Length: 121
Length: 452
Image (cartoon, rainbow over all chains, first blue to last red; front, top):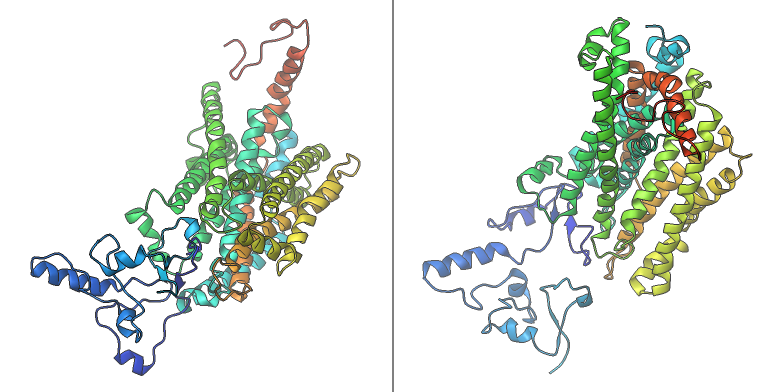
């Protein structure tokens, strides 16, 4: 946590409290974290697991766009895409290699997997 | 066995005093308060402390580094003095070793109280990763604890045997702990050989401990931490604060039990000199560390450095420099000034100064994250202060408990010093001189008995 140059890991200093409304929208696929542990974005690993199992049941490879992360679904401007950076057929493969692609603190060599696209054509 | 004058070394074990019990009660109170505060933290979460995002390391990690640093007093100094045959070490080594064992235990607990889920400590055994500095840390601290307790215990055996032969109420304990030691020449030879092996082993382990602790910081990419110099810098600071703590304990023990005859001004003068040397060495490291950061002028580094030089942490930074460098150097560099009160003043200043150094290493780097996140100042709460006070109280209690059970000055080593130590030292000095041939004045200096 202290070592992360992005200060992105969060610690649960207290037992999390939820309003009744929020309680009703809990995702049954996600285990809620308790006090005293560190957490960070998991890139919706629970969704990836489901997509993987579906692909396996259909005896095929996981394809680009088989699953979306939650923030991607929620974004009204479609500004977020998610996929396999090593898959030459995926949208993110091309986006990550465009001249508009930048990463935060790239010079540290931490190889972050979150890539931003600057404004442009 | 007649001990003569050395009888008074057993006095703390045989006699108690009202003042001592008052101190014990006070310290027990502080420990109870610590347990209560920790319970609160366990129930409500680490939010009870002043730590928050992004300063997620506070008093606990500072005290961890600080206490483990103090622990270098002991074994390292005592091992070096024993190895170099420094005759003046005899009344000092035991106390140094006791400090190490107690403080190491207290320091070692600190990372655990900093855990939100202490039960997950066991994950170290289940899924510890070899590339993690935290695993290195657990390994080297537990190795050091093992080595230093053995190193404390070995020279204690003849003294325990002495206590066993005198009878008394805790005889059963001494009988078990003395391991059937009867001071026969053979047993003594084995003991001394074991001691020699242990002191050679203990030095690299001690150096590794604080180096590895520095790696927890240095292996990250954080500005102010990612520094090659951190390993030796931490070891130097550890020995520095260790000597200071040893001096404080020696002076307290000396005045409490009137041991002026054993702990003489010469001991304080020698250790004071050592403290002075470490102060200069510490300043050299500090100077190199900050000059590199300032001269490079890298924006992230400079932000942390300025936070220390002129920002929120300026009082602590300049206070540290004053306490760690200006006070000891001005008090200890002249032999005339190197008296016991000034040694005590310098030692207290150094212990506080070294604690500030740990504070200055841990917090500012976290308070200035690279990315523009919300930053904050770290203010410890009642919980952290309670645990700090409790840790110090545990140290005092541990020391009193030890003093009530075993002699704090090694009785047999003092006795040896009067006999063979004096002989060997005279012999050694003679052997340095030109025209000397071994055997003309006495037997050559050797570890074993003459004639072997």
